Length: 399
Image 1 (cartoon, one colour):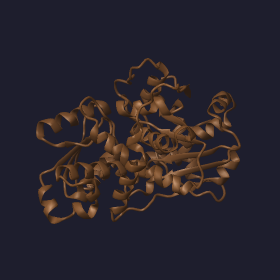
Image 2: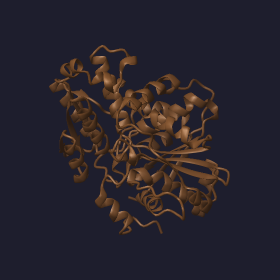
Image 3: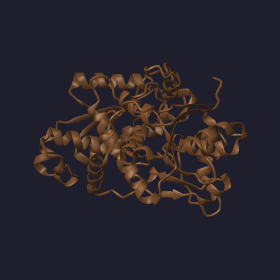
């Protein structure tokens, strides 16, 4: 495959835009209130990389470090815990105001929930979040992993008590298999991608991610001018984009979506701009396992097409570069242990500022000495063997 950095810009017209009220102040407050009720909750740190920003000629670069989230080494627990709690509250006929960890732990509720079984398909981080949420609320969980997933990630899921197994499917077919099993066995599918007839739970997952955006804005102290967001099916970037669109409207930052060349379904959809979603089919193999998805979530794409500004598809080495930059900080900058999917946005920002052949893209996005950047490191070293191959051994060099 001929890999390169490719980009497309979507101009937004004054026509009717998709509704982002599901990510507004009320929805965010409910998610934040629920997460704060969890005994293990604390905001993840925002790493202010002042020396890196100065070295690249930018005003500021701050990276939200989700490796510190709930002891799970990734951000996914925000969406899984919130969506499972929403489902359980609905199952128990509880009002949203009573949807707290303490309420759901009451013996009479735990007894009624004993028969609930969750199921999902995942490359690892989402499945670990599902296993953790199931353990949190005393539920059973089954996790199906795509072909080529990491044995370490499988072990992490099993370590939390879930039944987990590899499949011979790619991610999107594994999702279809999990949905089929849910239908046949009466299990509850907790999946962050939507499809026809299945949108409520994916939207709840996305609302759970607004806690991350809320924390970031409390920590940033100022409005970022630019946000770079990585995408798999698009649920996280759509949630963050929806949050900023709902809270700040036309004053929101410039938003750039980043994907691997090998799984750039959202970039392809944006580039075609024909009203259809475009897929990447067959076996997908990228070090960015969390982004190796071939089909955009329809509810995510509705938000991204109306409110995100730039869509960039990148080679594997861009993620590797980001991992090495964050893991080997300049001077007094804090170290961020960032996995392949977590570091790709930082890698792209650095490349845009250092590679003169990309001046056209840097200028189109509007990066300069006054730019204030926000990136999200969505995972830590969730596959430690591969992390060391990249950071220690120089896998996927960027020179």
